[in-house]
Image: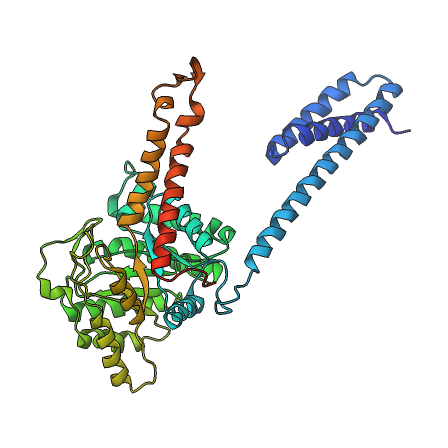
Length: 452
C-alpha cells in the first residue's frame, strides 16, 4: 500500500493531468508546474485516511491515463498532417520537368520551368497582389487551370500588406509587407498543388532601398533553408542610360546569383502608368527596344556565374486600361531580336532569350500569342484581375443589398440578424472567386492550361 504522501501526490498530478486533457491541452509549461504545486499542497491538507489515499491514487491513475490518451490523439493528428504535407510535397507532374514540384519554385527548377514554357509555347501569368485574398485567388486559378502562376508584389502592394499606418521610414513597411506576403505564399502554396513563382515588380533606381531590404531577407532565408525566399525580382532601370542600366543590373545579378535568384530587367520603356510608375508622356521611340540593346544585356548578364535573367523588352506595350485596337504592339521586334542574338551566338537555339511581357491591356489575342511564339514566357495580368476582384465584391453587394443596410432587420423580419451577410469573408470571397475565374480566362489566352 503506497503512503499517504505518495497517494496525494499522485492524486494531484492525476487531477491536473485530467484537467489538462479536457480543458487546456496547450497550457504553458511554467503554468503547468505552478498548478501542480498548488494541487499537491491542497491534496496534502485534505488527505486524512488510507481510503481517501487509495481513491486519490485511483483518480491520479485515471487522470494520467486520460492525459496520455489525449496526447496520443494529438500525436495521431499531427502525424496525419505531416503525412498529408509530405504527400503534397512528393507530388510530381506528368508533363513538367522533374525538378518542378508543387509550391514555390526557385533556382534551377525555376529555369527549367521557364524553359519548358518557352519550348511548349505558353506564358505564365504574373499577377500583382495586395492581400491574402488576391494571393489565394491566384493560386486557386492556377489549380483550376492546371498551370503555374507568378504571384507578384509591387512596392506599394507590400506597403499595403504591412498597413498604410505602419512606419515606412527607409521603406520599412514596404519591405516588411512584401516579406510577410511571401511568407504567406510559402506557407500555403503547396496546398494548391501547383508551381508558384514568387516575384516582385518594377523597382526603379530611387526604390533600390526596398530591393536591398528584400535581398537581405533572401540571403537570411537562403542561409537557413538552402534556397531564397523569393524566386525572382525585377529591376526597372529603363529610365537610366543604357550603360548604367546594364551595369547596375550586372551588379545585382552577381549578388542574386549567390542565392539562386533570377533577375528580370527592363529595356526601353513600357508606356502608361501603374502603381507609382508613370511613363504616360514618354517619347514613342522609347517604346520599342532595338535588338542591339538586348544583345548588350544578354552578353553582359550571361557572363555572370550562375546568373539567371529574363528581359522585359519594350515592343509598344503600355500599362493601364485601353480598348482593343488602341495599342500599337509590335511583337515582330521580339522575333527579330531572337534571330539577331542567335546569329551572334552561332547557336542552333531559335529562342535564346526569355522575354517577359508588360502592359498587355488593349492588345489583341493574335498579337499576344505571336509574342509568345517569340519566346515570351511571362505576361503581367493586373488591370483585368483587379477589376474582377472589385466586380465580384460589387456583385455580392448588389445581390444582398437588402441584408446589408443594418445589423438587424431585413426583408425576412425586423429582428432578423444580418451577420452572415456582412461578415467580411462573404464579400471578399466573392471577389476571390471572380478574380480566379477571370484569371483562368487569361490563362486560356496564354495557353497556360493543363500544362502540368
